[in-house]
Length: 434
Image 1 (cartoon, helix red, strand yellow):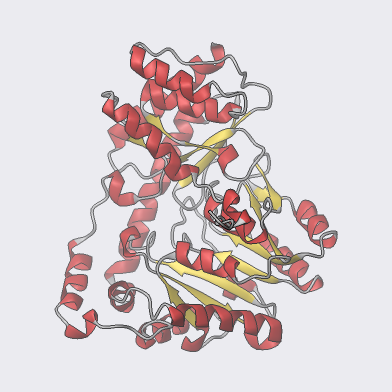
Image 2: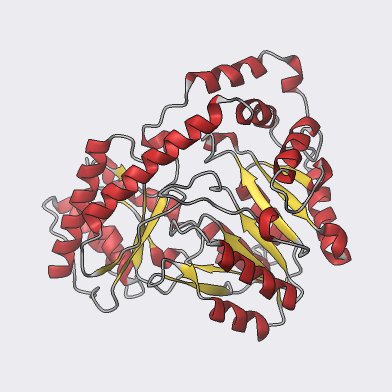
């Protein structure tokens, strides 16, 4: 080309959660059955949407207004409904003008980081959900800046690490919280959240809180939302319905701006995000119209509680199967759909492998791990996929130096769930002994 085409930051864009699907599809062509433990899609894991919710959405489709554009910031009635829900928390108070809809949180995340000055940075957790870490790194054209989540302390943030990195890096303008956390399944205690706010206040930062799993908690936990503990610090909460309803295919998410009137620069940033959406005209309308009807239905809280109890039960079952392996750092999850499982330091070796009888499958697996640059947890994940058909994601792909893998807690068929994780346990033990 006569001029350089690709932007420098594009090299930071990666998404192993989806990339590993390409390898799994090659195995499917060779006859291997695949168990998809790589992605948080309840529908793919045999979940059935209740009839009452389908009927509610079907009724909206009968209205002609559904087929037109919405307001660029989102359907006014829906934004008003959501603002009132936030205000009932007795924390930060907002109006519908502080809410902006996107085509899913992926759209919101990429847009948000796009409009941060390239010399300014947002520090996020490690392990980190790769949509955040990749988008932040791409905007800055360099590797993400992260604070540590500690697998030896319930996956809680290392607040000393966070404080020092903020203190000694003046480029940092914001702190990202993912609560409940993906990929660890951790739920932040209130005192930790309040200490993060104190750091933001001391260094004049804003907070971003990804709350897509805020209603997905279990085992006696609940997630505190940003509006409840933020105080007077500027902040952005990111929310959606892909996990709550769940309706991942709706691609419907929104952000809520808090305390924008307290900081002119932050308010200008929020206005830039609003203008970016206005250029696109609007976000998808149907799911926006469904939000007040579904969330205000008296059946919804009962339904969501039952779903959370089922996920909690599955987390206990997985703990029984995997929690006793001494070579693993294992934490029982409290929220979201995932568990991040870490190998103890030194137990993974570059010669380890799983036995694979089929020549074609074995040759394919060996081609995936032949590079010396392949991390040790990726090597395990690729052998696991080829030998057992279990598709998980390596933790090193979540912007982390730790070695392990992420699983989901979504399989509705309990017998199949037990089968998958019993096979996973056997594979771990075989691999480590090889």
